[in-house]
Image (cartoon, rainbow, N blue to C red; front, side, top):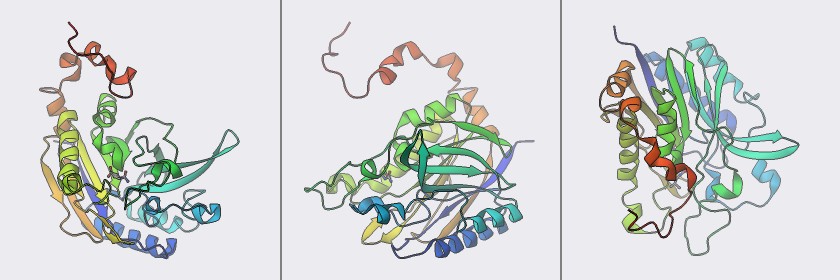
Length: 315
Ligand code: CDV
C-alpha cells in the first residue's frame, strides 16, 4: 500500500500592524482545527506568520523592530498553538522572525520551524535567499528590506525524517532558486514546505510584476517536478497595510501537477492527500539522480555566485 500523508496549506489573509499575537494565534488555531477536521496530519502556515510583513517598511527604532521578533519558541503567546496542535495530533510548519543570541551577538533571522504531532520542534530552518535591499531604494515605490532586517540563514537546506516522511523546509524567495530544491532532493526530501509573502509590486515594472502569480506557480511546479518531491506552499495573502500579497497557496505533486490550490486571498485551508511513494517513482526513472546526474559539469554553480565574464566560446 502506498505511503500517504494528508497535508494542509493554511493560507492567511492580511495581518494589520496593530493586530496582537493573541489575535493572530487565535486565527492560526481556527485554521489548524479546520485542517484537522478535514483529516490533515501536517499543516503549513506562511512565512512570518505572526505579524504583518514588516520588511516593507524602513523602521529605525530598535524597540519597534524587536517587537516583530520572537525571542523564544514557543513563547507565552504562541504556546496555545503548540498545545492545540498536540491535542489534535497535527504537525505544523510555522514561519516567524527570530531574534537569537549566538556567539555573544544578537542575530535576526527569517525562520521556520517544523513541529511534530507530539508538539516537539524537530527542525529549524533560517531563510538563505533574502530578497530586496539592505537600505531603502529612493526610485522604488514599494520597498522590500529583508537584507536590512535579517542575515542569511546559517543552517543550509536540511531535511528531517519525521511523521512518516522525509521533509525539508525553505522560505518564500528560496522557492525561486533551483538549488534550494536540489540540495534537499539529494538528501531524500519527499516533501518540501514553504511559506511566503509575495507582493505584486516589488519590482515596480509592470512587465515583471504582472506575472507574479505565473512566476509563483512556475517556480513551485518546476521545483516539484524537477526534484520529484511534493511541495506545500502557503501564502500570506490579500491587501495588507496597502500592499497586495498574492494568494495561490498550493500543494504540488512530484509530477508537477497541482493537487489543490486556494481560491481566495483570505484565511483558507487547502488540503490534499499526498502519495509519498510518487516521489520514489520519479526518482527511479527520469530523475534517477545517481544514474543520470553529471556533477562534474555543474561545478560552476557552487563555485561562482554571479555570472562570469569571458566564458564564451570555450572549447
Ligand atoms: N518574502 C519574499 O521573499 N518575497 C519575495 C518577493 C519580494 C520577490 C518572493 O520571492 O516572493
